[in-house]
Image (tube, rainbow, N blue to C red; front, side, top):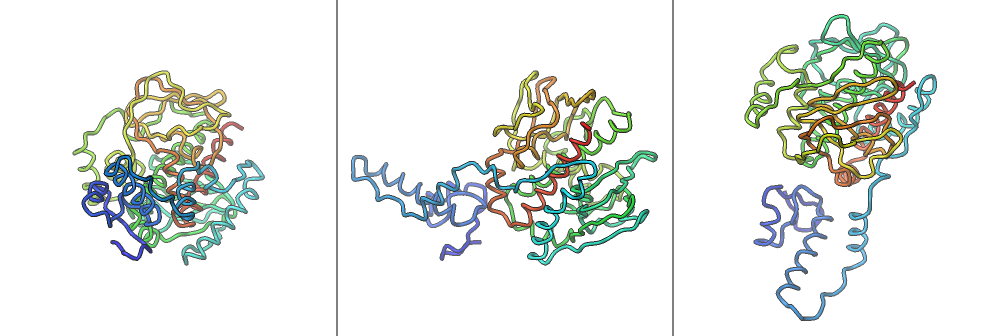
Length: 388
């Protein structure tokens, strides 16, 4: 849709730049707000004018508002997500309080979410039930019972449960119950999807990537704490899917019942692989992908499509395979890596360009920034607990 008054404009992603040269009244880039689109349109228009009048007088300088917008678009976005306290242990609940207040305010402004208190042993949701809400844990701990009997994960403040419902409205594949007193905010998945649907940027891929990174970190740290760390972690095993196979999995997933076929995490992995938002890249074996105590420094965050990466923390080591997400929470929050990551062989990966992702978060609604910050805080806290 488009409004010629400049208040708002969206342009289809495909061939948007080409269409600018045919019809300069349209924004030159895909799926961006009109303010940035108009800046780029002005720049392209003046470039064309300069080429057509070589040797002529230079174009007039840009106005103040356009220069300010250009400066904002070009500077690094390291402070987009507010600074977060990643304390652990007994301080975890207190550390989550400021973030909870920020998130609650954003939810109130958006008329979304409701706070709930759960007594010890209360079931938040069961496997096979319709996943209608995203749960953000503010205080207390819960036990997540996995699909395989006898296994499970303990999760605490800052963690996000049932994030998959935000993307596909599937059935729950796990059962979660309270360990002691628990406080959580419930967000309607349907309402969140309605708000996210018009946003055709990379926002959904950012949230899916954070959800997958949280799943990976929670499972590995829980296994390590129990002394039962698996030698490898991979959502899709060793198989490499072709483009048509990825699309077929997504189509067939809509007709399956809970517990059949792929898990929700696997389907999110497939969706990120099948989409066009994240560029593909090849990384060489032996390359350091993250070093404990060091910030990402602008390197793209990545999801493994094929190949193996070594993850090390303390005395623990595991090989990460397909679907593993590395560096996304660290890049978005500006935090240093807690674990060491090294490519064991040549990798095919999907990448999140960090500056582009941060710019996207800056332009999006405050609610999504608060949700992304909540993901990042939970991931960092869980990594530190694994080190403890």
